[in-house]
Amino acid sequence: MNKKYISLSLALVMSATMSGQNKNAPVNEDESKVQAFELPDLLTCTGGERVETAKQWEKKRRPELLKLFSQQEYGVTPRQTGIKVKHELVSSNPKAMNGLATEKQVRFTFTGKNKQTHQALLLLYIPNHAKGRVPVIVSYNFHGNQTTTFEEDVLFSPSRDLMKKAGSDNWVRGEQASRWSYELALQRGYAVATMNYHDICPDSPALMEHGIPSLLPNYNVESREANEWGAIGIWAWGYSRIADYLVKEKQIDKDCMVVLGHSRLGKTALWAGVQDKRFKVVISNDSGCGGAALSKRVFGENIARITGNFPHWFCPAFNAYSENEASMPFDQHELLALVAPRHVYVASAEDDSWADPKGEYLSAYYAGPAYQLYDMQGLPSATQPAVHQPQHYDVGYHIRSGKHDVTAYDWQCYLDFCDKVFQTKSDR
Ligand code: GTR
Image (cartoon, rainbow, N blue to C red; front, side):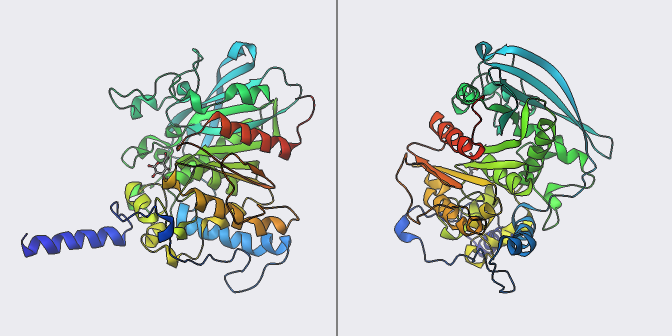
């Protein structure tokens, strides 16, 4: 190898590392190799002041942490996007799921200040047997509404044409149905609302301009300011737009809205739930790095890898912590704590070491002191429970056997937890 080539590759590696885009950074999945680390104290303000009361938390520490996560990780959600949203009922089927539910499909048309428009499709199931208003679980899907069920009349999400790779079996009707326990949720009196996340913002830097970013004047993911939002921020914003619609649905109990997400969408659910207090239960399913898992354990996926593989997810400032988690002035337990006094639930899967199940648990555990300020109960022990031993306090946690996925077991645990939170009325 000649000298010129060596120095060129060195320069490339250095610039990639400096901008946080090191796809090849080493990964540790061996617990014995986790280095000692120090977590920032949840209840100590940046200036050293100690938080003793819920009032101090709300006035000082919570806003301070929210700002850190906005400016350093997910990017700042604009106060005003200038985007207007119109809802149109495209179809309504009162006898869906063998009569169990009413199915509604609602087209969202977003119009930007630049007069550009963009569309997304919501699928909503409401249980027929329920009297009165019902709680609702809001959750994005990966490959289109039509993949979440075999019901024939579910329309293909508009993003299919843009995102489906030729020859792939993804996006086929029912393909992800095992991840959606609609019948269980409906029988237990819950409505479920889903939308394809690509409908809000395609999950690829090159395609983002086909989503909400096309309505944002001057937004360019490649040349963003350090603190400008990325895809996770935009998806989280989309969750709030779904909530805007649901609070106007007559049969939905607007005080019982749950946001649930898996993996990258678990990271999104957390960020949405932190910012939008209308979500009373916030559920992260296997969300891992940049979601529930503690970054400072540097176990499984790490910041260098995630920012290298998905440069559009976070804000550019997050890249500074690539291969440098020890320098972070915050960690993910503080994100979970921002949900208090509402409820946060973290779930892990035993074979999902990429998402660091132990780091997910510890993060939920270390969010506890924020709940104690409200006389609520976090997770009682720093020791992770065994598989299939759900912990349902004011913070929830379970780990199940198996791989990175969403299963009927996960849904059952979430419904049990939500029942407890909402103290289900007997008529549901
Ligand atoms: C992986 C990524 C994870 C997780 C996952 C998913 O490739 O490394 O952070 O988000 O994708 O969303 O399925």
